[in-house]
Image (cartoon, rainbow, N blue to C red; front, side, top):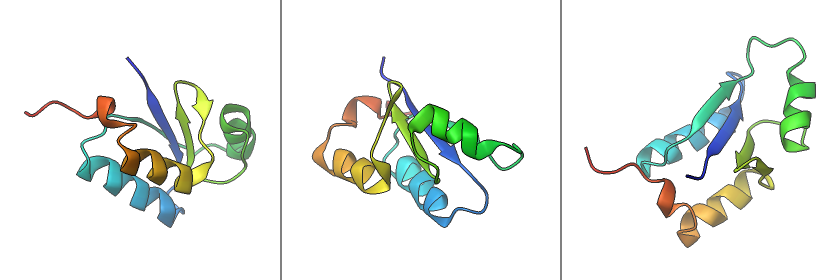
Length: 86
């Protein structure tokens, strides 16, 4: 199964928007909260190749930021990550 991981920080308003979009669309994801990590930028860069939040990876491949995620979501490319009806 494919895996979506988001790297977030409590200071990041785009991260909050991303999480709301994921919940609204019932997309399964794993969140790594960087808020309490001193060297979070190094970790973020190591995992995504980018310095800013949110960092987003799909199957350990970094997405090109939030706009790329929205494009994939709108195209239906993430539909297989949707949670089944409860």
